[in-house]
Image (cartoon, rainbow, N blue to C red; front, side, top):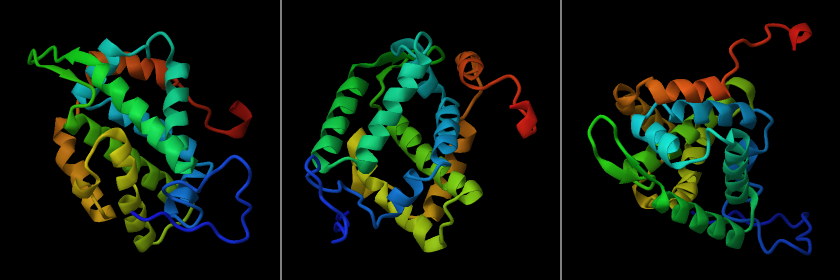
Length: 214
């Protein structure tokens, strides 16, 4: 995907070489700069753990139990760097992430399969579920996106796919394709023992129902 050009009215500044792989005219910048992104990210992080092998590798090979806030912060920093950073910073963030994933080993307790976090089907689930959650967040809370904008957003995320280690040419290009993918994966999702502790850490047992309770 070609980067959108920098508008002439924007000062390049002293510390940014370029507008990265998306740019101010992209749908990605509109969605990722909206306050609803935080809700979408929380949604994505939760539903991603319903994929058993994703949850197993988080349980067995990460520090999420000990440092959940730090783990979430680093994930957010990676996404922000890819979305808004210059190309060199985005490329470096992707390189670091791929190296980390390749070093995270887990064993499926049900099948005995040994695997790493860069297993393609796991990367696809985490990547696509984030894209889906961001679109659902925009649909519910804003920014308002036309059908064409939603397709553009999905297509733009192929850049993120490359950063996490997927072939961008093999990724989805429209909202309809993304929704179909989510339906196909749905039977593979499960709420297991390790998902329960993840939920206990990340999801409050009760939520305020009115501003006065917050």
